[in-house]
Length: 308
Image (cartoon, rainbow, N blue to C red; front, side, top):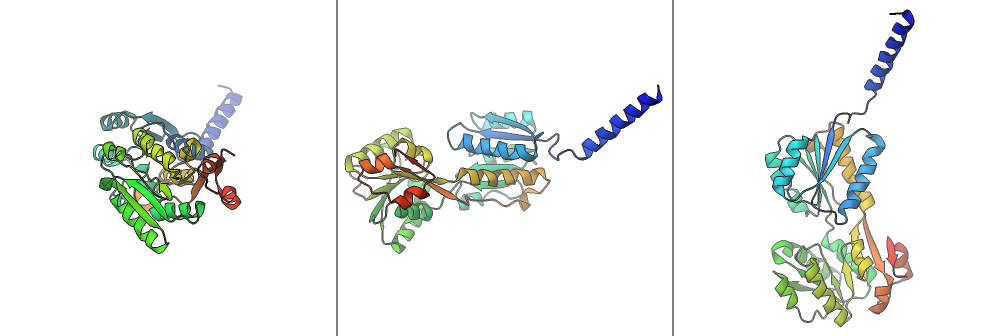
């Protein structure tokens, strides 16, 4: 071997060694993203988290799967053998943890604080999407000043605590919350007159099903009642307004949790979070139909205004 060849080999090894020393810490690591469906806001959250991770961790192996159920999630996780799991919109965290040992799990879901606290901190980081009821009511009063009554339809088995919080807020802010407890879709069909200034929707899987919403919206149209929805999609498709997590800010929170784990921080040292910022959306055309006056100040403060 010539001296020139030896020099080139030495230089090549030297450069390779330097590049490995500076290689990102995620090299060889896998993030498994598990989702239950592709309904918003799941795609937006995942897209934003991916973009944030790509800025500083370009070689991180990210695998994204849609599961059909708990067994499917366990099988995929065992096959993938990830370093971190990002679970979005699938309430199977505890089941997964019972079957997958030693893998930290970052969860993005609508968990209430008291439920989020039931997850052991040595394995889980909870990035809750839950917006407190008092915050939803405060925004409702801001968007619709002067309202006297706000109706809430809810499943007592899941959301009695939400209604209790709503009534505490109402007592302190000169409004009345009208309870409409329902246990099934038949109960919703039996609701006759809401007789209220506004209807506030809350995240309730029974109430916000397609069949239930069809009946609820029909009643509100008949009684000229403005509806406050739970996401941008609701305002875009016909509610007067909607209150939602700011998903850009929220996605940064979720990405930060994953980054902390990539940097070898133990899960117990990574704080669980709740939304730091709330957005609201206005459907100006629907407000006009309902004879609801939306001030210029409210319109300017909206994340988006539809139907102008």
